[in-house]
Length: 394
Image 1 (tube, rainbow, N blue to C red):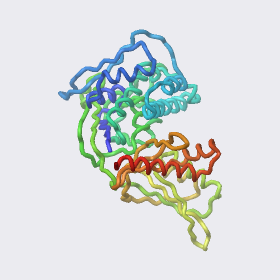
Image 2 (image 1 turned 60 degrees about the horizontal axis):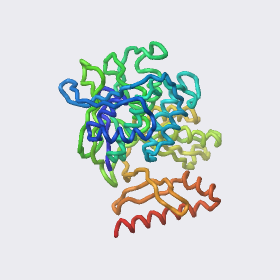
Image 3 (image 1 turned 90 degrees about the horizontal axis):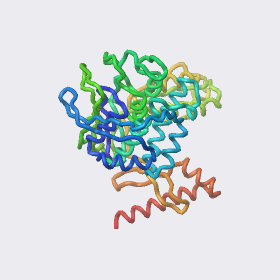
Image 4 (image 1 turned 180 degrees about the vertical axis):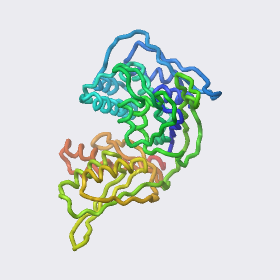
């Protein structure tokens, strides 16, 4: 599985990510050709080699040839991307990044996400940065994403709304659940676009995961920093394959005094906040009272947030935690052609190769739309997977 590791020792922005992708080998000509499918005009893309603290990287600049002063809403941007002939994976990832930014800006300015008018982030250069990055990851065949902890920087920055603290309010919301730290540099090291790319793509944060590094690319920030090289480093390589082992955090609480109706809502909140799994187990507690054991599996980065939700949404007075090792199959999103059409599936890799696993919500949608039993849709996915395996082994 192709893995990209974001080494954010000087922070991250959209243009730094795009520069690092070009440095990794994504052809600039290819990016320009694919970006043209958006139908957005009035700009040119320039990538040049620069040095930061003696390290060579690529600095990307989007030159605007005319100023429209055209503020687009999230819905406007979503339509531009959705209607383009770019492949589905690129469109889904791009829209996901913009949706996160819209939700964060909406919370800051007390607006609905759909109605947020993009200023800095909605300009042509940011559309090019975000969609260009997703085109680059697709070109490199990246299946998985991980990142280091992120230095936020400090001080203040001027923008459309006036003087804001660093990190900006929207950036803080986008970094929720991601490990951050203050390295003492008084500058905006993480932009909303950079934070949203990490939040939308990365499945884990922390030290460099087990991988075989193939290529390294550096994306340069616009200015020099005296404290660190102003670069984003992307490491591209092969992640551990089927049966890889990873460390997770397990949170548990025994509860016997909670309204059962609250349990389902608590589970929803925990999943929304990034839990890898949530399970309820019937147990008998003191005085032979029936209760439930709530078990949550999460990454270390999400432990504090999920513990807070535990206390907010259940009646427990204490949450246990411990580290555990788990072996997991490599997975990514894919599609199979069935008699009900093209369906989204999970692709799981084991010793025998890649096999599709049905996505419940996708199968449920088809079952309702076609008015057929859910089991028939599951069977169609299994049949499509078996047919594909036959083709591969011929």
